[in-house]
Amino acid sequence: FDHMGGFKHLSSVQEIKKELMENGPIVSTSFVLPRPLLDNEKYSSAFLKSRVEKTHEVVIVGWMTAAAGQFWLVKSLDADSPPVPIAMGHFGIDDCCVSPIVNFTSVVWQNGPYFDAEFSSDEWMEWRALLLDLSDAEMQDLACCFKTGLLAASRQGSTFVIRNKNKFAHSRRYRLKEISWNKETSKWTVSAEKV
Image 1: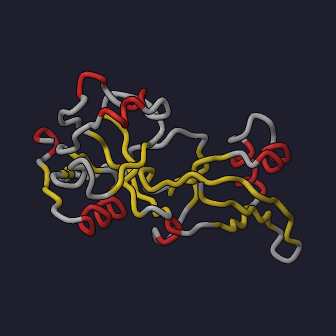
Image 2 (image 1 turned 90 degrees about the horizontal axis):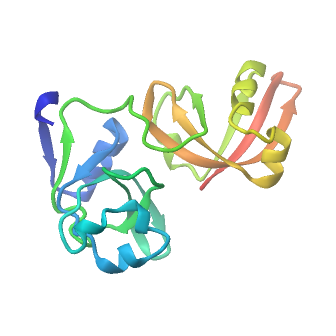
């Protein structure tokens, strides 16, 4: 990151989460790739085979909470694959993390399709479900996310990525649930659930 003005070290889970929320993805330079993770067919394409049992730089793009605890969502710097969950505090993932001083808020980190919306804060990123009130033009933009059409996408529970149009790195994948017309507001109401 020297050519971008330098970097800062993040020394705690809270600092990492704060940086993710405010400025987008960060890099872990201390993650040690365990063989069982590489041997798992679901994740094998996400990492470099040459880095087994060695440090493997990864981009932390977010986090999630599951019954087993909290997990970082990581992507390899060298592979274009979906994020892989790595348990916080395991395999050195959060021992040494860095973030550029200049942020990457306009960099896209998730595979689309994308629907861009304007949000006044980043609280929506933590919501399990969203209700969006969309104009006709915004509804057309959403429809462009689905090759099968909106009705089929709703029935199939198709997924899409909602991005803050002012900070593309602030994005989350949602499953389309329901679409209805609201006569009182003259807008479309779209229900979506976080994946």
